[in-house]
Image 1 (cartoon, rainbow, N blue to C red):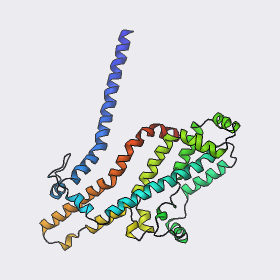
Image 2 (cartoon, rainbow, N blue to C red; image 1 turned 90 degrees about the vertical axis):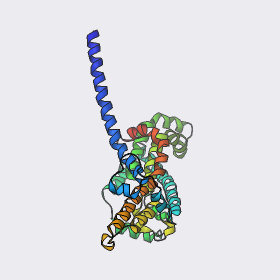
Image 3 (cartoon, rainbow, N blue to C red; image 1 turned 90 degrees about the horizontal axis):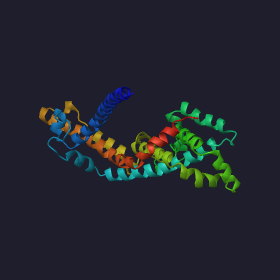
Image 4 (spheres, rainbow, N blue to C red; image 1 turned 135 degrees about the vertical axis):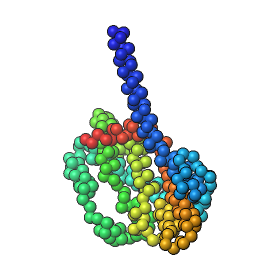
Length: 298
């Protein structure tokens, strides 16, 4: 018996070492590009274009960030992106809760029909031009609402939240609440929402990151630069700094400018990613519970 236990123990140790090595390798594969981008953003253009940057900054400089923040619209871009992210996420969560709760109740006889309608919109859509015409007919062009109202609800997130309600909120709790005279709205806001913190936190991050990274809708619907989100401002910075090799005869000048362009790319990636990376740790603890429960599509 002792030998068998020792043998199993050795096998467990070997398996443990193998999985540890695999996890370590996966961590390195994920972290190295992030470390490289951050290091390259603080390195000199010559070091970036010559490929001398690996893990640590080479010839440290802030020229890339200085070029990014030199743009007069960068601060307004940050402010607009935060407005779109917070306002849009609040609207998303509100609409998702209001749509997911009735679809999760067995007493709602038409829930399968309306669920089918929602799923249909995931598979088929009118396309970009009809959507643009709808936004235009509603008078939303060149307004902040153009980036909030058309994306007010994600059907995929709706299904996840509906499933969470079905698997987490017991029917006995609803029956007890109705006996005490609680209607559906009171039950939703006083019982369901407080018990759904993990899935709300996960979907808040999903929606928030989506709004923060969104630029295509702004490119279509907005013309006023004062309303542009950060992503569109960074895009304009990169485009304005692009160079045409044919127009530059001096090779040294061409290399210098190309190095600055590459430096700008890494700097804009860091500038655009820092706010989301700062928010992520506060909701990371909810991910395992929220995603695992919500992934059971019932």
